[in-house]
Image 1 (cartoon, one colour):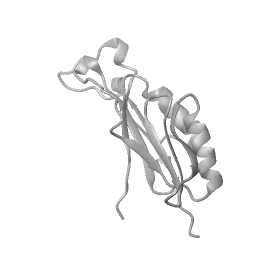
Image 2: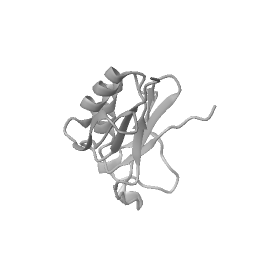
Image 3: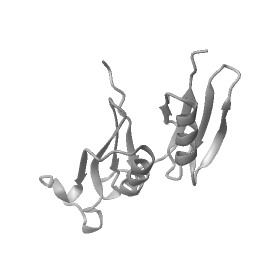
Image 4: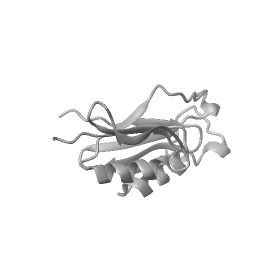
Length: 142
């Protein structure tokens, strides 16, 4: 089975973002690796970045994992956030769609309010308070 594991990059806010996502989805982090945990030969991580997240994983459901990292300018990484990526969630019920939409959009910007759409699905989209774009799409077998 092919799995889709979204990997998110943040400009120093990975830990805060993943604690927020954990509060919404529940569960425990599988992995939390900080830059100071993984010394890289020939690479000096500035003290201000040493405690930033190199890798983090949060299981979501049975077969999905949300993963992320901090993009460090001190390593020549320049994060440019845009609307080119949406995280698409397909909950099992309308109630779960409502819960996820409400929790994840808190403090963010709604693009399309969650509602029954002309194509037959219960759908909404938004940008969360960390700049990540999300789509919630519940499809009922009518």
